[in-house]
Image 1 (tube, rainbow over the protein chains, first blue to last red):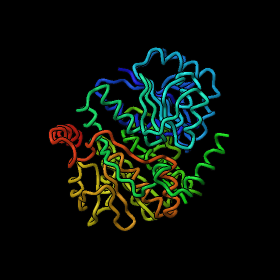
Image 2: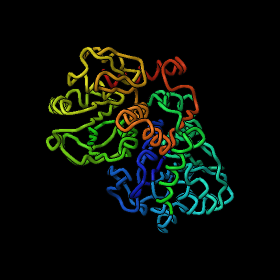
Image 3: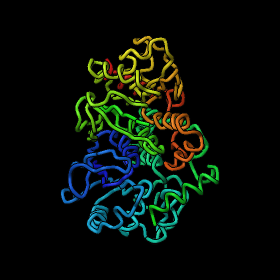
Image 4: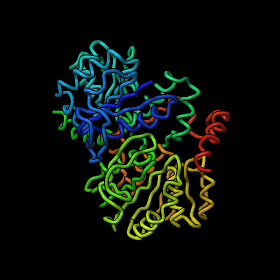
Length: 210
Length: 210
């Protein structure tokens, strides 16, 4: 089984690395990282990651993972990448996204008529691509799986691991990464956080999606 | 405020990238990544990350984050890195580790007589460095903060963010990364997981720490 992570300039590293840490531990998988061109890609936080392959090198994958970014126009404006996503999607068993990666799947035309999730601050933007914004941590629609913001990719990857390799393996992976989360505050979703914090953060994030 | 992530061959990427995604969003911080030599470093899962600086370039930092690895002898056997950690620790406000990164802090001599945590499978190895193995998600001992396995670095980073910038900022960061975890299984710690899974995984992991 082959698992491909799409990398791009300005991506949010944790969107990709959360699932990468889980899925790369599945028995018998081969993992690759791909970008418009092979080589360095800088995350929105300044971290430089390396893409092993260029898009043109990869014509098939079993699992595709598309991370999000602080500014999703990075990729929704890239016709070549969107065309590649459409093409590779025809070959996948699972096509997945984390955070605003779902806006990229939407822009590629994969979400029309389907329920999907995204980062809470831009969830309604999915409507622009004909998707049904769905307030869930992880949404499954046929072979497409979308996760909510950033850290939700870890939950998605464990769900996906169970579908690929069974619950026993997925539980082993959860234990391997000691995923027994204990957030210090009750502020991880707009329903739980202080409304003033939600409003201020939403306003700040949306300036990057104007 | 300056935050430094130690990178090294064979490190577990999520140990570093979880805290990196949180701490790099603190207002007014400068984040840098350092390794024995500047340039590419490969994670245990094959991901190539870039260190911006060599150890010799960095003589001060406010916050140090040391990630773990599937095989902690990677660094506990490196006298130059351990000497650098000891030296930089004299300059820090916070010296932190994730997962088996605490074994590296221990090998550097920083944990003698102190409570600390680590990945559950090797927690007792802390005794070799005079530390008190402590079964907690995050352990604070003076200016040293250690986190349990892999994903625990996210919890630690949010606790640290609150200490550095206040609870309001930390809650904003938690909401920004939508850290409202919903693990699909109740298997994230040895106390919760199926005992057969714990035993098999412990045996497999310990072959790498023999």
